[in-house]
Amino acid sequence: MRYDDIQPTDVRLPRGYPVLAHISIDPVKWFEFERLIGDTPVTKIIGRNDARDERLVVHVACASTSVRDRLQDGWE
Image 1 (cartoon, helix red, strand yellow):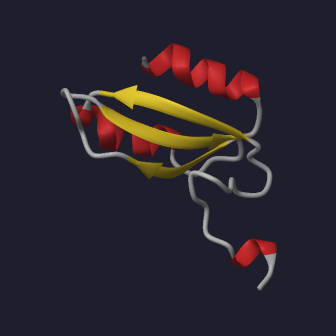
Image 2 (cartoon, rainbow, N blue to C red):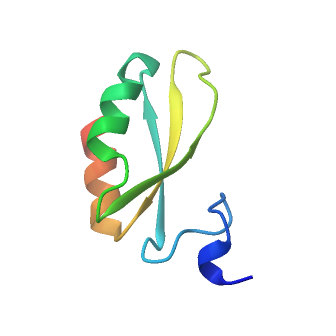
Image 3 (cartoon, rainbow, N blue to C red):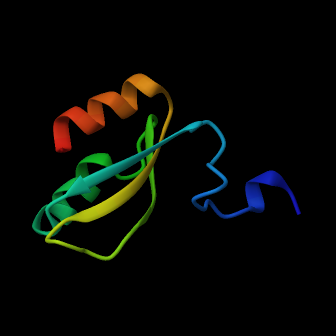
């Protein structure tokens, strides 16, 4: 098994995305978030938790801490 064959999890981030962001969003905005953030050169959605208290937590692997900070500022 090679590194590229391992699926991303909360523990292992995909290659090139060393920073993990937990973004809390309104579930109604999920499709907009997925369309805008999705798999880009600087972000990759690697999971999400079920909505609780009317919020959905999305796990996003980011290329840098500045990308994570911008995501958190823009969506929370």
